[in-house]
Length: 396
Image (cartoon, rainbow, N blue to C red; front, side, top):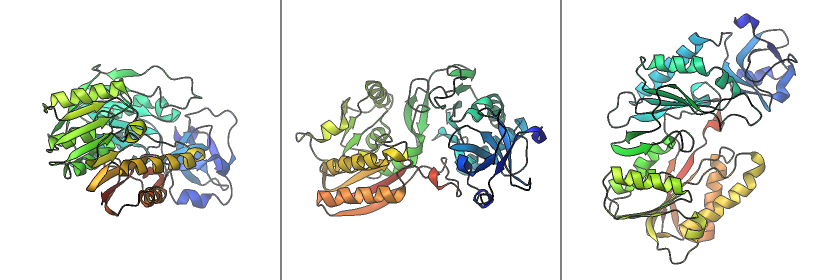
């Protein structure tokens, strides 16, 4: 079957870029392609001499081919079975398989697992599949079959949540649906702490699993401290702080539905009444002079920029936000600050926070550099995968 895949030819001089194993081929590198290609088709990529370079999904956009293999292979059930088996072995090496203290993790992380355009998260034996490319969406039955096979057929539920993640130009998708089972929510444990998950209504797949190690890091700074968690979403950092002896926690998010989940997570962990929950605009609240200062402040905003064109405005917004946050940190306190904007790289993020520090006029030390957890691996050939940047600052 692989011999029947349409062929795309690369421009002369562009072969070297593919030999560096970056998983994207941009439209400017294409010399010729069949005129009748449709989004999501599997294609073979060759050089001018017809030598095979890669196999991947075609998409009519700036990223024209998302590479799935640099070998001449069929993208069939066998391919997806091998992919899921590899992902399972990697998560097992991290101690995430059959772990009674943590039963939620990312199972497939796009390019980090060699599958551009695919995300799969596991929540207490329930899987949520999110396709960001048409190619992966067209292969979702192969993918779900291989996923269940990797877990020995023991998954309770497999939910396809791709309606809002697929390109807007694609009009062939269905509503989100269940391939197996039909629970709409579950309760997980993460480092022994309970969280309620609703993948149908929650952002992304329902929970920000990439912050697990950073939540654990915050716990080490929380005992006996006052903590302010801005853009708290469902309260991950807040719940960790409370579970590890924070004297009080103040959680803020503009989303009322998110704050309802914060309240639920507070309740299922049976905490006391030392938790203030505000469904408010973070910028407005930080600008309120009546708001007290805190021992620990967490700034974990949504992506301010999803394209290079919006990067400058995003950087200015990050700077303003962190200037305001630094004003709310007590003497000898800590600021945990993050950016999940892929187009704001680590160096630019660092320089932005440094600019905010200069503006604050305070003595500041870097305690830790933070990133996403290891179940969100970064493909060494795809530096763009290092999307989550964080710093822990000691503020005098």
